[in-house]
Length: 232
Ligand code: ADP
Ligand code: MG
Image (cartoon, rainbow, N blue to C red; front, side, top):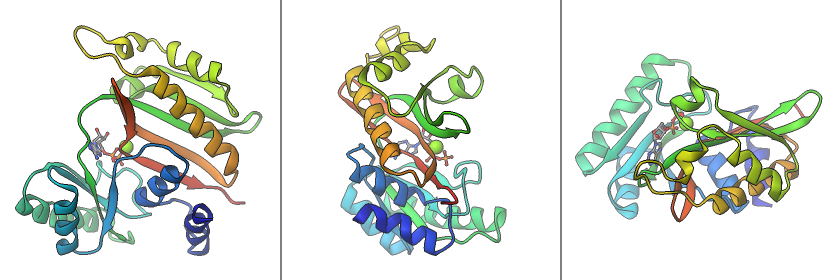
């Protein structure tokens, strides 16, 4: 299976962290909606992929040694011209080489700039007692500062998925707050169930983060994904 190909290759190379591109590919194969993303190993390639996707695009560092890409200057959003793409490519590589001189750089990922939505996160970590546990919350500062998140043990039922979305304090934001458009909660429930299935089918995955997912009135898309493999 293609699935296993990505995981096997990482293991063979002694890597625990999949690149964002590998993580998105795996999740896409599991029916999880991710933003179109391709690896470029040169500036020219970054340009041609950008033209293929259509502007605006996003460029990010692709390295299995860099966990927090934007902290290190490894993410450039909203690039609208070939010039901006070229400059972003150079700036990203320079910033990473400076901050992480030891990092192995696979290239730069080029992706479509997703339209703005409500940022949510879906995560999985393993509890010593309960095994894999899914987490749901609103993205950005709401999660980082307020820790407004909910948890359920894998495998989740549809009812679990519905409850974990509705029990966060920020739920009114998803219903549409002060003129903001409401998001498609049924679609988020399905997404959470797909993640639960994915986790069940891949015991070798130790940690998973879709951070963020942009939720819309009609569907949702993950713009960043992180997968960490375990010892097994
Ligand atoms: P990090 O490794 O720092 O978490 P991300 O890939 O999450 O990097 O990018 C940082 C932020 O940039 C995201 O939280 C999101 O707000 C925005 N972003 C990332 N990718 C896209 C995209 N394809 N389209 C639109 N916004 C994006
Ligand atoms: Mg992220």
